[in-house]
Image (cartoon, rainbow, N blue to C red; front, side, top):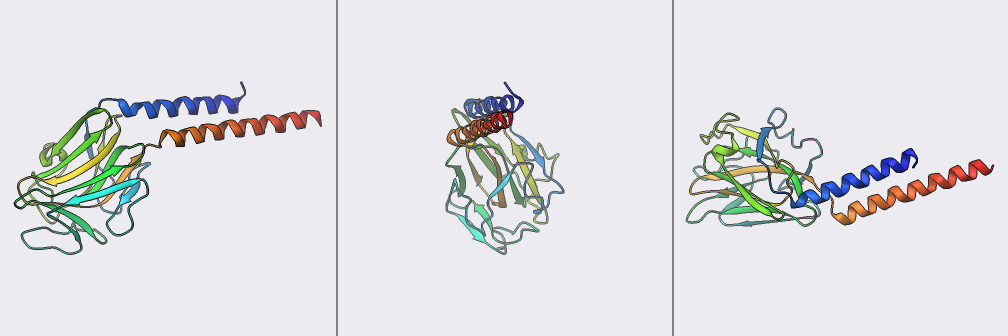
Length: 225
């Protein structure tokens, strides 16, 4: 087997391994601050922006929200506050008589991590990750902040951070934000590391095969010449 075909075979094996990981039980969901924590550091390595509440939702995803919630600019005293540094519209998922919610759902292969720009962090913030064929994981504000070691959870409206969630090898199909019982969960710039659908992997593998065949034909022509 020539070097190119060995590379293609390795890539094919790796792709099937990644696709198969969608059935893995979720590991520990770990949180980190990306870059300097500003909105500008909106994505980690391999992440793409899927929802920033200004442009259209990225292809391959669905977004929905239930009242009470707010999408727009500015702040409302006692209800919600724009994350400092957010460049445009953002979402505030509120809690009043009921808890509002906002959910991003993958329509394809899911995603292996998720980040968002969140403001006014407090203990009422709640985020739930739903995985393929595995139990969901819900983190409250204290857990999101790693017990307060990453940032304060006092609801300080002067604070905002780019927070990344890594799933330890598991693949999520959706993420839901809520503020449980009080206050609001303000955020912007949702980004993910997407997992390609099996059909996409198949096309990539087929492409490797066609490229390998083209190389073999070219070598045969050169040998005859």
